[in-house]
Image (cartoon, rainbow, N blue to C red; front, top):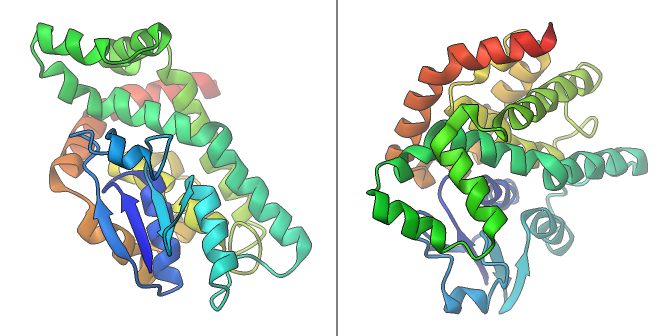
Length: 265
């Protein structure tokens, strides 16, 4: 029996739910509220020592890290293969998914937090805010968090993160001009992996970033038309988070457009 410990709008959770849906696998849900820090318990530590979501449990054996989980699912349940047969396409797939773990995921988190989720912390009293920061054991992490919350899109962390997300879109468009899917001729783990990150930009109303990138726009439309997209997103996305991201993203877009335009110039 497959069990998934996951969060609603968590991009890594979406990645795994997409693959489960593409493979039409049955699974038992263990939904964890990240805002209430339900993934920070000792009981969950026994499943995932990193205290992150998602975590998959297959017949009692835990598998962690979303990229690893998706590779595991494709190896364990190969009836609907999501890795290309051609070795060069399989290598290309892994080059794409590697990028998620070596920069894109961190950039997406920074962009989301600086635009939207910071407002949840700004609503705290001064005492509550300092208590929240004090729970972070590493001083550097406390200061990075303070910078993102207090300064938002003016944080020193924000511009490089936004630039990385724009580069992701540019790179995808270049590849999709040559092949219908990121790894080649067929939908793969690469497409499942990148879907939540393009979707996150969409949730933040930053989709003008690909207004002149028609291949990304076409890919995203085809992604959204797949049954797996609604299964992996629809019921799991809470309206409060979606509203917060949409409202704050729309408010910030004019300044972000200027930021991107000045970088291009």
